[in-house]
Amino acid sequence: MTVDDSASGASASGPTGPGTPIGRDQHTPHHEVDHTVQPTADPLAIRLEQLILGAERRYTPFQAARSAGVSMELASRFWRAMGFADIGQARALTEADVLALRRLAGLVEAGLLSEPMAVQVARSTGQTTARLAEWQIDSFLEGLTEPPEPGMTRTEVTYPLVELLLPELEEFLVYVWRRQLAAATGRVVQVADDEEMVDRRLAVGFADLVGFTRLTRRLEEEELGELVESFETTAADLVAAYGGRLIKTLGDEVLYCADDAATAAEIALRLIETMEADPQMPELRVGIAFGTVTTRMGDVFGTTVNLASRLTSIAPKDAVLVDGAMAEELSRTGAAPVSEKEAETQPDEGAAYRFALQPMWQRPVRGLGVVEPWSLTRRKRR
Image (cartoon, rainbow, N blue to C red):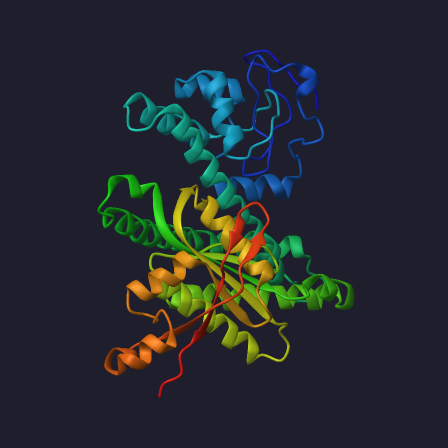
C-alpha cells in the first residue's frame, strides 16, 4: 500500500481496533510510518469488521479528524493512546471513530478533563479492552468456531457466531464496567482525607509460585498453560470473594490489595491453604506490606508495593511474611495480638484474635534497607 499524505488521499482500507492501524499526523515523517502493519483487504475480514463496528469504512484519518473538529495532531495522540498503529491516510475509519474523537475533544473543551487526562483515559481504556479482545478471540471464539460438520471451514462458522454473540457480550461488558465503576467510586468517596483519594493507605500483597522456572523446563507448554490458568483463576476468585482487588497477574505471580489489613491477611492465608490442598500445584509464598500507595490506571506504585514484593522473595515456602506496619495495623484493629503473651493475659479479647504474628530476624532488603519481617499465621483457637 502506498501512503498518501494528501488531505483527501485514500488507499486500501483497513480495520480499526486495539493494535490495528489508524493514522499519523501531518508532521510525522514518511520514513517513520510502520509500513509492516497494513489494512486488510480480505473480504471476510471486512465483513466481520463491518458487523462488529456497525458501519462501513468511510474516512481517512485526516477526514475523520476534520469531521470531529479536532486537529490531526490531537487525533493522532488519541488514536495512539488507544493502541491504534499508523496507516497514513488510508480510508479506514467510520462514523464511530469520528464520534469518539468528538466526545473526547468535547470533554476537554468543556473543562471536564484536561488534555493529558483525556489521553490517559484513552490509553487505559485501549490497553484494558485490547487485552480483553485478545483473550476472547484466542480462548473463547477459537474454541467455539470449531467446524460442527465435516466439510465446513472455521471461516464459515465465525460470522454467524459473532453475529449472535456480539450484542450479548456488549451488554455484559457494559454491565460489569458499571458494577466495577460503582464499587471503585464508593471506595473513593468513603475516604475522609481528600489527599488519600490518590495516595491511599492500603495493604498490598504479592503471591508467588515457588520453583516456577524449573516447572517451565519440565512441563509441556499446554500443561504449563493449564497450571498458570488454574493459579490465576483460583487467586482471582479468592481475592474477590474475601473483599480484595486483583491488580494484575504475571503468570507465576499475582498482585492484590485491600483497604484493610485483616482482609489482605485472610486472602493470603486462604491462598496458601487452597494451594496446599491441590497436589498439582507448587508451593506458594506471600508477602504483604501496609502503607501509602499511589494508584494510576488501575495499577499501584510506591515503596509499599516494592516492600511487599521483596518480602515475597524472602518468604519461606507456604508461608506469609508481613512488614512492621502491617503487623502494627493488625494489632491496632484487633485482628492479631502483638504477642501470644499479650493474648494470654487478656483471655476474653484473645479469643477474638484471628491471626498470630511472630517477629523474624531483621535482614537487609535490596533497595529498602534493613527490615524486620513478621510471620503471619492463622491463630489456633484454644
